[in-house]
Image 1 (cartoon, rainbow, N blue to C red):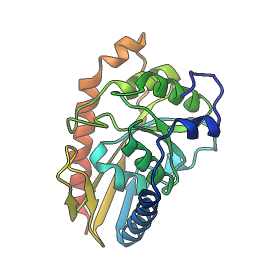
Image 2: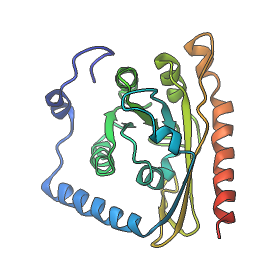
Image 3: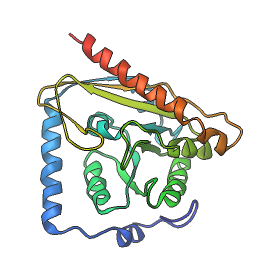
Length: 233
């Protein structure tokens, strides 16, 4: 990724990405289509998104935070152009192509690899008016751990953080570190957007030290969305 403010071209991005075999590309296309078909069956309720969706294009960007295991339901119901921080590993390229099918785009890098470059690029994109999505417990966990990346990004870009949490009344959970959630056909899926939280800390180091506070807030939102889901008729 180029440094903040530097040149950014599709050709440069493409040259840095791992090459996927034709079999993998076909699997991605089929898998993405199946996920879309599955999503069409969900009974989706989205709470707190209307004001964000109504913003004029290119204004008032935010940093969305969502847990890695809830990514599928959150992105399916999102419908807002957003850059998603994604690992530079080979599986990151697969995820990048899948999220593109849901109207998002990848910003490559993670806390474990390419993190500084990715954050600089994310700041540049945010300052141009585009929202950024961050999984603070990705790409390797532990589940529900909160890395300081979104706090650093939000402070440097001067934009608020908005949580997204989801709950399905019926789902499959993978045996992965994040217990990745796949709502079953015709599941009731509830997605909750939190209120924007602007960081007023004196410096980025002070902002980064608030990980426990924001982790607790996101876990409380997980409980809140589960309660909202249970209350649905």
